[in-house]
View 1 (spheres, rainbow, N blue to C red):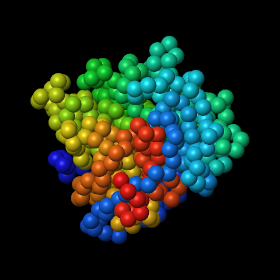
View 2: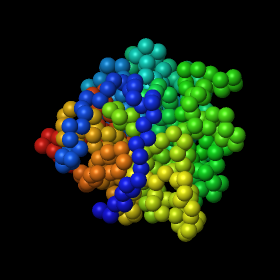
View 3: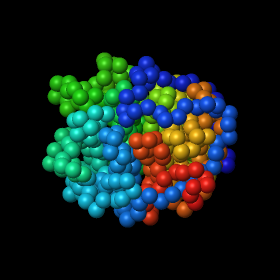
Length: 396
């Protein structure tokens, strides 16, 4: 594999990252980052899903997994059993197909008490829009589809590059990944335009409201009070941040940004950072935009890989479970097209190890965690949820 590793990135921890909040703490702590990254295997947990694109848990102690189906349903896997009744069915609201659809879900850190969760979907309402909405728990294993509270409605100029990831950070705020709006080469320069929410990582407070907003802006967001900047922005210069996650031990935010013609990349996100799109694609000036770009002030990826090693990166998680001790502290990620899974170790300054873990037969659309911080992947093409297990306990 021909990987390009950047050695100049510094650890982007903020004070809030020291107080991890959502769904408990890491179950393992690195005992020695020099140990070899172990082999892994895969074990099917559930099948019969339709185009699964996201896996998560509610942090409520129930042990359930929640799986997002692109067309507009959220399904429950309860102790290994896929329930026939959906947790949420909003197919009539969702415009699905290609890169559109119901793309993500995040449960409130106090979901067990308040029953609130958040979804990201695309809809046709006088044009294509991304919707970020709050829903409430219903009875039993069902949500209340009539409880929708709209937080954000963002116009999409094209049907691709919709982002779709939602996650609560260790600070209790909701982070939202927004793609650049689509087409090629970011024709409206949305990635670098700080007056639009497209091409950004957003950060909002869902527990308060500011004036006419259905949410509040955290006071420490980087562009609060800055003219010509949307205050929701946490980081910018992104093309299509399909999946991102926080390390449960360190709070570091890893984001995989899907590339265009040449490179896929992994970024470590820091407050106010500019990650280069459309000036750069991965470590190079964007072909078709500029062959001699100004890289000053841009945050380079911690790791990039070129096509044809992969064509569509799927961001994962830093492993913090207990079943594979030697995997502790390894960021696990994959590629949807080449169906490969890799792992890397990052010491806060550089990638110290990186290796191919498995060549699979699965179109990996997403990774996910359970409450014990064991890892799973969604096979989009075959409608399966698969658990990552020790090498001796499963098969590719």
